[in-house]
Image (cartoon, rainbow, N blue to C red; front, side, top):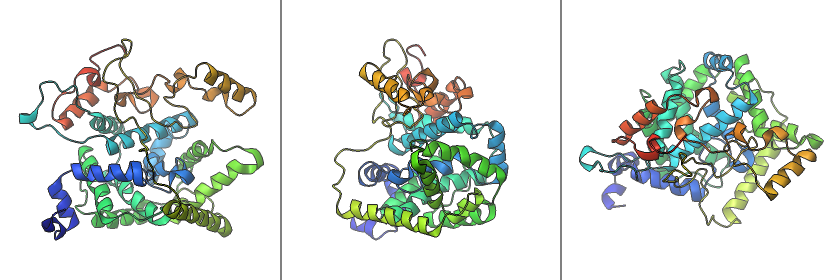
Length: 393
C-alpha cells in the first residue's frame, strides 16, 4: 500500500480501492486463514451449523410469529432446507465476483461472466418480497453478518481480525445490503455496531414464537450426534452455552450450569491455542461452494451445482451408487442411518440452481424475475444456461 494510503483512514482507502480489494481480503481470510468465519458464531468445528441462527431467525416476536404461521421454520425438513439454502446463498455472494459491467464495457457475448453472486442476491430479494419485514429487521440481520464474525473471532478464534479484515466485512455486506434495497445503512463499521447494540436492547425480547422456531433448528444442528449415553442432549446444552445471554433469554432457553459453560469455553480456547501454535496452515482452500460452475448443459439438461460439503439432511447430495449404496443400506440395517435421509429426489439429488433456492413451494416460481434482476445488477442481461435458455429443466 502506498505512503499516501497509509496516512488515510482505512475506510477511505477501501472506498478508493473499490469492492475488488475487500473481496480478495475476505477470500484469503475465509478459505485459507480462518475458513470458519463465513457465518456469525463460534468456529465450525464446535458450532456445526448454529452460526446461521441469525439468518434463520428473527428475534422480534412479530416476525417470529409470522414465520411460525408459514410453518417454514417449524417443520424439520423445511428447517434443514432453509438452513442449507441460506448457507449456499451467503457463501455464493461472499466468494463469487461482485463486479459490474459498465455500458461501454458491455461484452458482445456475456455467457463467460459469472453472475452467481447477483443471482443469489436477486433470489433472496424475490423471497423476501413475499413477507412483510421492516427495514430495521433487515438491517439488524445484515449487521450480524458483519459483527458476528468479528466478535466470534475475538471470543473463539485463534486470532482476532485485523482492521483491514474488519473493514472488508463491512464493505462487502454494505454492498450486499444496498443490492437488497436496505435503507439507512450506517456509513461506518463503528456506527453499525452502535446501531445493532441499540436494536438488540430494544427488540430482542423473550417470546414463545422465538422458542417454537429454535427447537427444530437445534434438532437439525444436533442430529449428527448419537443419542447413545446422552451425547445428543449434551451437544444440545453445549449449543445453548455458546449463545450470548441476551439471545438465550430471547429464545427462552434454560441457563446451563456454570461448570459446563466454563468447560465449553476452556475447550474452545484450547483448540484456539492448538490452531495458533501447533496446527499446520491450510494448503488447499476450503470452499463451501464450487469455485466454478459447469459452463454447458449435461445430457441436454441445465447444469446444476452442489455444495462441497453436505449436511445430515443430504440436500443436493448425489444418489449413492455401487459400493456407496451398499454402505448406505448397511447403515440403515444397523440403525446408524435414518432410511428417510438417504440422498434421492426428495432431497433434490440432481443438484441446485440459484434461482430455485428457497421453500419448496416456491421452487418453480420467480425464475424470470430473478434472472432479470440479476442482469440489472450485473449491468447486462444474463444468457445461456444462466438464463435457462439451453437444456431441459
